[in-house]
Length: 234
Image (cartoon, rainbow, N blue to C red; front, side):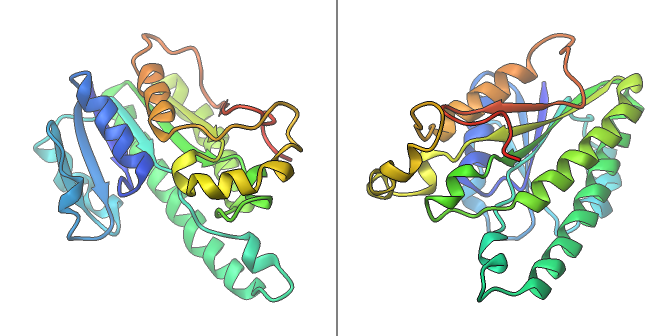
């Protein structure tokens, strides 16, 4: 399998790369900024582009089309901009930049896989409940907009052999020092089950394993990963 990790420069991006590489898959790592030599791992190749859509033709003129593409988690905070001292104008600007860019990239990569007649795309979003108890970025609006885009595009390309799904992940332990998780324990009891932040490697292992399933019977869905969380916070 050939896997491409978009926006790989994060804990989760590197864990994904490690997991795909360790089981023998070829890995293409994408970052939007240069000087990311620390992303280089055995069995992987690094590509840099602020606008990956512009580079698609060049990248894949000499490379085989990926079998799996993962749009890594985008950690942009909306909650602070919605607070009484926040900026609605800044929030609107942030969403106006992020959402059209994401839809453009999703459409471009879907078309790339559709031309090959097969492929899987995962879009990682974050279930945001924990963000109201611990200081991690919360991006509820962008997440729900991405889900709407995924469902719209997925139904168009599923008949062409391309399966697109979202994976909604609970806050993971590497996002905060363990002391901060412990300090927030009382507030986190609001979850129906006992909340437990999950390890980023466990998330990556799950995504890698799902990607290896032959004839994956899932398209246009939101899959939750977490312990003590709702299926998707409304």
